[in-house]
Image 1: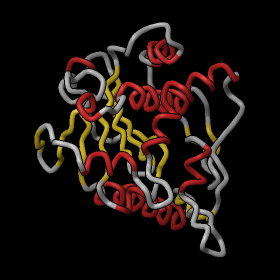
Image 2: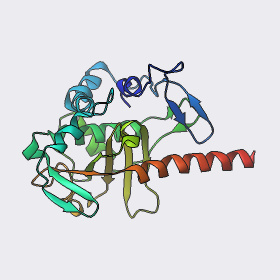
Image 3: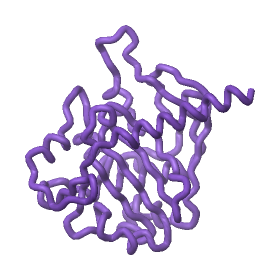
Image 4: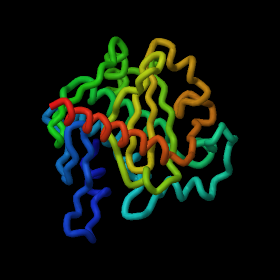
Length: 238
């Protein structure tokens, strides 16, 4: 995750301003970033200008949520279950950069084993689509057929003041990864038919460049509940 995420989530008014980090083994308070030496400065610059900079511009920070404020005055495109869909193309949001950011996070999580502040090492598995995604991130090809990104803007304060690392959705046919970045929830689908099957909801493939908005409280709490439950289970097995 970008270093700025750790800064945005701090609470300067508290004696300990650092965020609470929930891991499967333990819960700690720290602003220590999950990072390592992996890419050259040229690739890091690509990731920044093609996605990260734009996402940080619209993410929630210092009690302000620019993208949420934009949607508050925008005309909805349609209703989709409990979510409201907006046209990124109509409201001036470059969804291509959000999708680029999403794939860059997922790809980085897959090509390296990352050590977290809670002592857990993590790595994702993408399989054959890993190389098409790499080539896209380098600018050698267009958006890969093997990927689709669904972008949801969280309307709840709880999700706007939290972020979590990418993880795979279990009991899902195919590969789906999710992560949250201060009010921006990404679902990344990876697989041979991902682009075709999810064409109409992908923020890159759908003609309107769709963005969704919903209350994400339940999903965000479920993530932390699962982490805490697995942590308690690990303690009992020691």
